[in-house]
Image 1 (cartoon, rainbow, N blue to C red):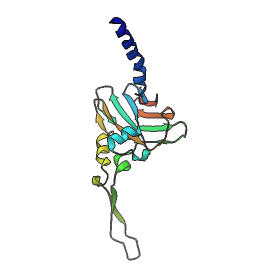
Image 2 (tube, one colour; image 1 turned 30 degrees about the vertical axis):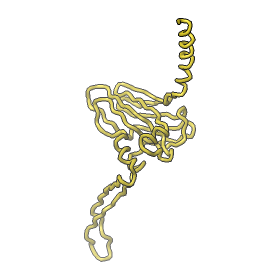
Image 3 (cartoon, helix red, strand yellow; image 1 turned 90 degrees about the vertical axis):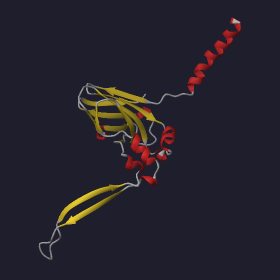
Image 4 (tube, rainbow, N blue to C red; image 1 turned 45 degrees about the horizontal axis):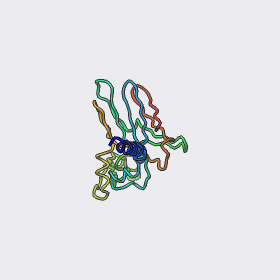
Length: 191
């Protein structure tokens, strides 16, 4: 019986690399300093479509990011601290908000004017009010985006979320994620 099991064991052992070959590890970048540790994983267009029901016409490089603060004080997460650069095209961008990706909202501008000094003078602008109105029913991906996108807030524990950068069709090996933290800038390449 041992002789029969040995070939079966060898066959299973031989198939393991073949079975694992189908599972590609997503490109990942990480970095850290005294104030924070960052891990970013590139999300494939297929995964984006599974999560949101749309691949957004493959117009974005999507990262799943985890921020882990170091220390006792609350850490401020700000999307303006992230920049994704392409070393091949030299393009770069910050992340987009959910409304910029799939929102159907509109900006309503209301201006109020003061009284004219005389008939020939223009009316002085007294104030301007901007209001964003969204219609989440028009795009079903919008609600899911709002749930999954990395949110700007104070954190004391690791926080994860997705970031959408308008850099389509970039090879992961050409991308560099820059992050500005209180302890300095981090530069992370994808492997």
